[in-house]
Image 1 (cartoon, rainbow, N blue to C red):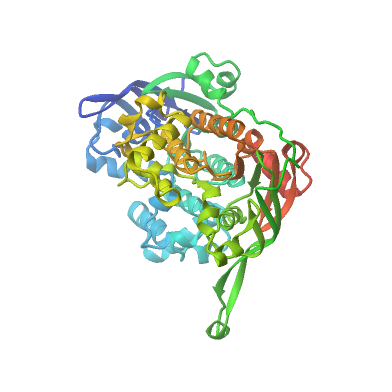
Image 2: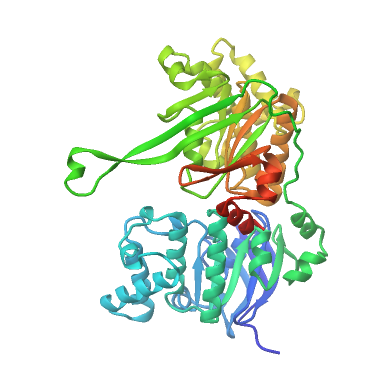
Length: 533
């Protein structure tokens, strides 16, 4: 048999004597694509990064033979020759992995000069060629851009170019598409597969997205709580999973459990007519001295959300989805008519009634960790809205309402025994629990409409299913309406009654969820649905 490029045996990782990865064994052949799958906390990222000793304060044992040499026995000096040269890494979030103070071209050129010994001029030329190979438009100009000046997909392509700069034998790709739209995910996967074939390198893909595994990998290894519970060919494992945890992951596609309320059940909770949102932008040359240009983020949108129904808004980053949500929340200026529960936002501001209107529409943000203040306790976070909208409540009444809200979202089994949660902080909770806290914070003031801005994109598939089931239950019990902003077609299929497809600020297609997803009319909608298949 051919000797594997990488052979990992009895890999154990511990922190302060507590083992988090327990005796993991796997191998990767040259040119093979292996996916390491599991939920957050399963140990997949720690296992992969520990091979290069990139995990701070980790106690690592076992063996990891790369072309016959044990990575775990190498000195730090020897490992420096391996990192970024024979083994390269693509990290999960390019915005934090790239240095904001240097252009992407300088960061790629640095690798070429350190690892390949190229001169500055040679490195600049090679950088442009690498960026071009990843499909970035105008690679020479993009090489001079800083990370914040690139889109999410372009930043990820720049990370891939940096990883490929030294022609590695093995590429560790840690959730390389999590922060990207569904169509961009497909593009990045196709790019990785194409580059992998061209360079003949092996790829270890770390992910919790089973659709990506099915589309990309040759073999899959499943991790649960630091144990490798199953591995094999992708087709075999997906068709006949042997372990209960693998079966649970494969069954985690969100289910649809919504009430088909009539579309004419009453006055729309949200109604927009000719909604337009624009931003001033500088004009080039002398014209910019005297006047500003205009970027139109939302163009003449007409929307209706009846009581108890969900309108899903789907599109790629930059399509105008989040701008539409901000306008609905009354947080940015707009033109046209925008009414919440019959009251126009512009009229409410003029008459001083905007506070009352804000009580009727609340928001759940994308990332529960960054949207909850780390300095506030659960009681302060969830009860904050009551201080604004019901200032007459006593501290005891507020606390009672907070505990009931925690019970409503499934964090507390019995409201009579929920006090021990109140003094905890967000970092003490899992991602799913934090998102439930965010829902509780929104619901406590009794809104009629929730704006859900990518409410599950930062969560694992199993936790995503739980949060969507919670939102479905709350809608059935309370008759809530939802404005659901997402790029995930599966979430739209599970939650929405009606769908609007946005691109470049325009509404390209709209209709009932079944019609739009099963029989899309616009080419852009067809491309989105195909990319999610």
